[in-house]
Length: 173
Image 1 (tube, rainbow, N blue to C red):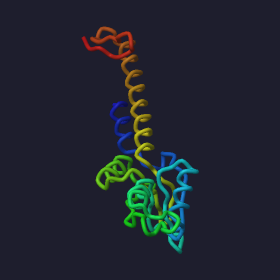
Image 2 (image 1 turned 90 degrees about the horizontal axis):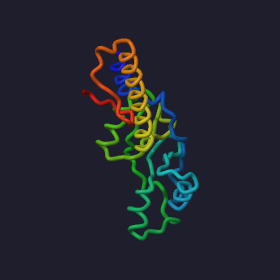
Image 3 (image 1 turned 135 degrees about the vertical axis):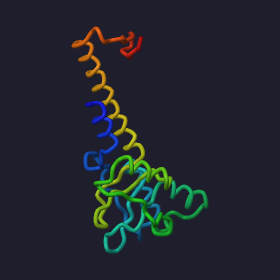
Image 4 (image 1 turned 180 degrees about the vertical axis):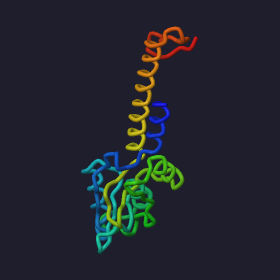
C-alpha cells in the first residue's frame, strides 16, 4: 500500500512542490541582440516576454533566435523581440500536476513553459527540470520499495523467494 501511494504521489505532484527556474523576462520592445545577451549571461534557454502592462505576451527562446534571425541572416540589433517571439504561450499554473505539464509540453512541442498566475509570471519550468524532478521522485520510490522488501524479509523470511545480486538488484527465484 505504501508503494501505491508513493507512485500516485509522483504522478499527482504539482508545481507547488517543485523549485522553479527564476523568472527571466524581457520587454517586447528590446532588441533580439539584447535577448541573446540576457540568455547567454543567465545560461538559460528562454525568456518570458512582457508587454507594456507587464503582462506575459510571449516567450523567446534560443531556438527562435537561431531559426528566425541567425538562419535568415537578419540583424539581431535591429529586430525587436516582439517580431520573433512565440505569441500564443503554452503555460501552466502552480497547481498544474506534473504529468499534465509533461503532456502539455509534448503536445505543443515546447521545452520551456512559463508558470503564470493572473497573467503574471511566477517562474519557468523546462523539460530538463521536469526530468530531473521526476527522476528524483522515482529514486525515492525505489528506495522505499527496497525498505519495504527488507522489512518483509526481516519479518517473514519463510515467504521470501528472492535475493539481492552483488549490485543490490532484486532477483526473484
